[in-house]
Length: 325
Image 1 (cartoon, rainbow, N blue to C red):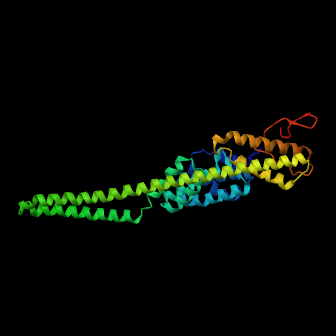
Image 2 (cartoon, helix red, strand yellow):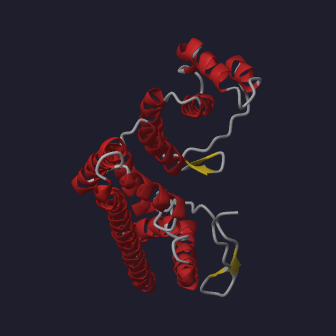
Image 3 (cartoon, rainbow, N blue to C red):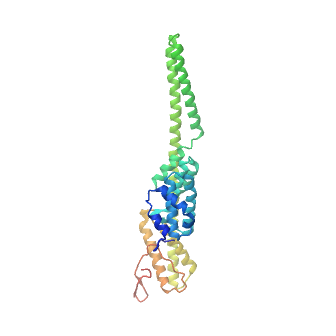
C-alpha cells in the first residue's frame, strides 16, 4: 500500500499550493498548462495534482473531462494500491462523483450501474440508496410515457370542450350546458388521474426494487464476513497444529496471513461481531509474531495496519518483547 510521505516539494508543486482551493478554473488552467511537467513529478505530488484537477473539473461542470480523469484516478489507485487520500475513501469518492457526472449528463443507465456496484460495497450508505432511486425515477417505463401522453391528449380535449361550451353552447344551446360541464370535469379528471397514478406506481416500484436490492446486498456482505471469520478461525487451528508439532508449514501459514489481511479489511462491517474479530486478530497476530522471531527467510514479513502487541512467553516462561514496535 502506497504511503504519502514527501519531505521535499518541487517548485511546480509549491506554485500549485499557492492557488486557493476553491479557485477551480485557475487550478484547471495551471494543470493544463503544465501537464507535461506534472507527469514527471514524484508520485505523491503528481497524484495530489491529479486529484485536485479532477475535483475542479467536476465542480465546474466539465463532466465529460471528469469522466476521463476519473478512470485515470481509479487506474492509478489500483496500480499503487492506494485506499485513502486526505481521509477520503478514494473509490467511493471518485465513483460517486462519476455517477453524479453521468446523472448530470442525463445518462441515467450508466449512473445506475455505478451506484449498484457502490451499494454492494457500502449497503448501509443511505445517500447512495437515495441517489439510486433518483436515477431510476428518470428512467421512465413505457406505461408512464403512455399515461403522460394520454394526460396531454385529455387535457387538449378538455380545452376543446370548454371552448365549444363558451362559444357555442352558452349562447345557443343552454340546455346542454350542464352536460358539457360534466364532460369537461370528467375529461380533466381522467387526465390528472392518469399522470398521478402512473407516477405513483412508478415510485412504488422503485421503492420496492431498491429496498430489495439493498437488503440482498447486506445479506451477501454478511455471508462474506461470516465466511472470513470461519476461515480465520480454521487457519488459527491449523497454526496451533503447526506449533504443537514444532514444524513449519508455509502453505498453512500463508493461508492464515491471507485470512488476516481479509479480516482487517472487513473489521468495520458488523460491530455486533467485534469480540469475534478481536479474538481472531489477536490469536493470528500472536502466532505470526512468534514465528517471525526465529524466521531467517523473510517469509513472515507481514506487518498489520494496527499491530497488536501481546506479551509472548517462551517455553521457559521468559517474556519476549513484540517484534513490531
